[in-house]
Amino acid sequence: MIELKNITKTFTGKQGNIHALKDVSLSVDQGEIFGVIGYSGAGKSTLIRCVNLLEKPDSGSVKVNGVDLTTLTSGKLREARSHIGMIFQGFNLLKTATVYDNIAIPLKLTGLDKKEVKSRVNKYLEIVGLSEKQNAYPAELSGGQKQRVAIARALSHEPEVLLSDEATSALDPDTTEAILDLLLKINKELGITILLITHEMNVIQRICDCVAVMENGEIIEEGRTKDIFTSPQHSTTKRFVNSLFSHDIPDDLLEELSESGQVATLSFFGESSGDPALALVTKKYDIFPNILSGNITRLKDEAFGQLLVHFKGDTAEIHKAIQFLQEKQVHVEGVTLNERHQRIS
Amino acid sequence: MNAINEFLDAWGADLWESTIQTFQMVGISLAISILIGLPLGILLVLTRPGKALDNKFVYNVLNVVINVIRSVPFIILLFFILPFTKFIVGTSIGVKGVIVPLVIYTAPYIARLMESALLEVDRGVVEAYEAMGIKTRHIIWNVLVRESRSSIVLGLTIATIGLIGATAMAGLVGGGGLGDLAYRYGHLRYEVDVMYVTVILLIILVQGLQSLGNFWAAKLKKD
Image (cartoon, rainbow over all chains, first blue to last red; front, side, top):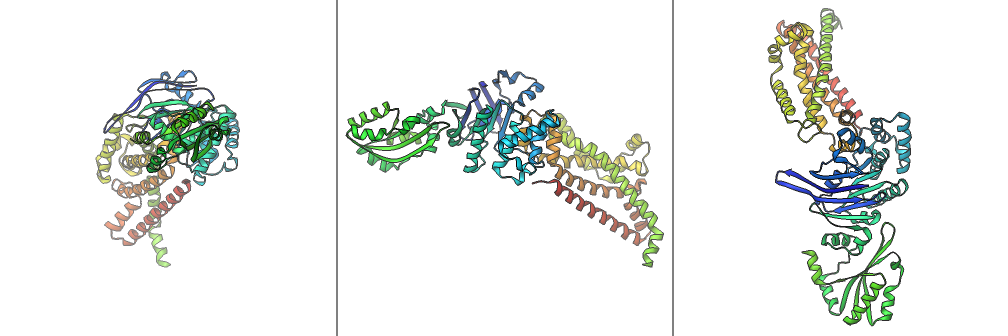
């Protein structure tokens, strides 16, 4: 649905050139929710703005629904843009217009007749749950409500694709949850493909099918959300996953525990998270697992749990136990002091 | 009471006529100045580096021209452009003759005021509209001008008051008006009463305009 190929973008700044995007390629399938995560300055904002050419890439092609936008004339580009919805961190509503007009004005400007405008505004206000606020001005709304209006405005053009530029970053956690639920609903019920960028891992965890991690203008890791969560490869990805499941134990404690056994993170997925695998381990092997901390959460449509466990016992026994766990579809990753220091450096 | 009646008998007609002349000069030149100044302000904003119609040449030329005109005091401008005035409206005296210099004086001022008002508009909203595939000319009107309308009204209020001040000098080319009345009778002929009354009338006019402008601007502002 969205296909970015070899996109590069360089900004000329006062302190020399900034390579915002270095040969980035990305492909988002129809009906998917694709998340791009990265710290500020990673280039993710430039990337999403390249999709509707708010930012013109220096080279590379941008295909949305099979059409290469970089080759279009400005008139054709406007037409193409009207099928690509976009929502922003700052909502970007007209302060001087009511909720109704905020959605109606752009529709009128794209040439829809009055009756159609009215029916669309009502339909999409209904979907975002703000029908009774249609005469309010943005200043009278909460952040979450403003974002709902912005979502309704984007949807009212009946786009095939919705781009979300940090849409929940300015919202409190509860409101973020509600907006994410709304995005999920839009994706499921209207079948709209969503490409979002964020710096919050919980956004990825809650709604994304696929995720790409960006750093310094490059995609450093990419895959199904599930895989990225269970076995992140790159250190930045690990930091993002750890931001959700923080099992950091103090260094001195880790050192002490490592002397009497092995500390490991166990990741459980979907069905395996319901299985008492750890209980079986204690019965089968001569070791004493001690749970240091634990966590269970939902990914988009599967449960995902993590345990930080200290296996006390003989090294060979521990090794066998870990193998057994892996056979049971539990992902095991050892935690050692060395590795941790590597991660920090 | 008697004194007031006497004063009105003597000066009422002149005062009335002068007030009308002031209104005429201000009204006509303001209307024309807005028609010229608003588009110029929009052009100044759009041709800025990095904006929709980024054009260094147009932007710089406009900037210089506006600054040059704004550097000339109105009284000088009035005489300086006499030939031009005559060429445009066929005469360089009377209300008609004074409109041209007033417009040339006010339009660049309004352009600057419009520029600063339009620059206040959140870039993000403009971007959101670009992302929806809305044409630039629609964005100008429905986003830029609409969102800055409260500042525009305040700016126009300031411009109008400045314009009233400028009309006082219009008397020098026979434009008439309240300022001219105060000058000719109050100053040159020592009719102090006339001077006081015209000054009070001008104060009331300016106060009223400013209050009206503030009220209207507040009403248009929705945040």
